[in-house]
Image 1 (cartoon, rainbow, N blue to C red):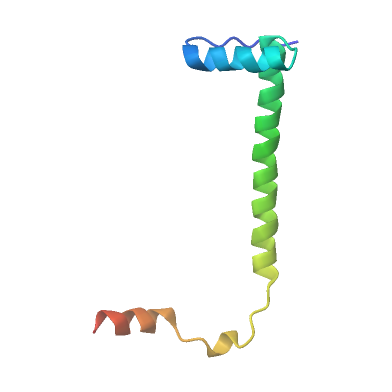
Image 2 (cartoon, rainbow, N blue to C red):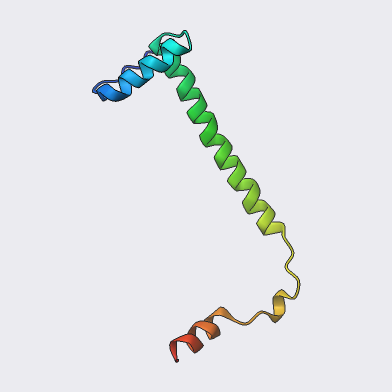
Length: 81
């Protein structure tokens, strides 16, 4: 199994990690692994959720889209005021 060593961890972070590990009846190493797994899964879930939302937006049909004014014309009109 690979070994991960972290140096120069802030004292307050180490103490918090130690407290959480003790509350969960785990060693600091075990708690670190649990927290890393949660963080990485959370990140992957957020990316997947964003992809789903973007796909939903892409597939959304907007009625009368051809009748919308050209944004360039709107910006130009606003600047000329």
